[in-house]
Image 1 (tube, rainbow, N blue to C red):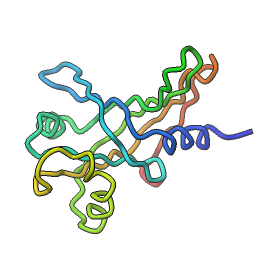
Image 2 (image 1 turned 90 degrees about the vertical axis):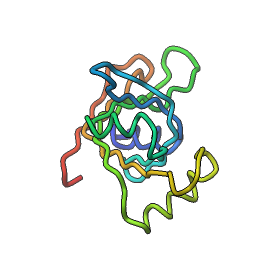
Image 3 (image 1 turned 45 degrees about the horizontal axis):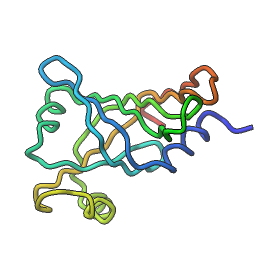
Length: 140
């Protein structure tokens, strides 16, 4: 029997695309994003001139839906509440750039690397079971 941590990590490791919501003018705004996962922390890139950068400077919290397989009722997915920060550490940025370079649109000097630290994750719709929650503290 696997733990909720294992089940969520399985979805995070399997998928790369999810929807990320931010707040624009007091209203939610969602877009598809590509993510890389490292032990429950998600990373993504965006253009430093994108609207989402302004939105995230005003409110660094996000909500992400991740992992729906489009097979119908019973498909599991993960809801993620997290806080975004910009990555400035060159080693990590370079490591992630290898993954994101093929999907990033724009000049490399315009690419911003974002880190999403989870606050809470919920495994949803696992064959009709109720949601399973995983909360994170600063030391996880």
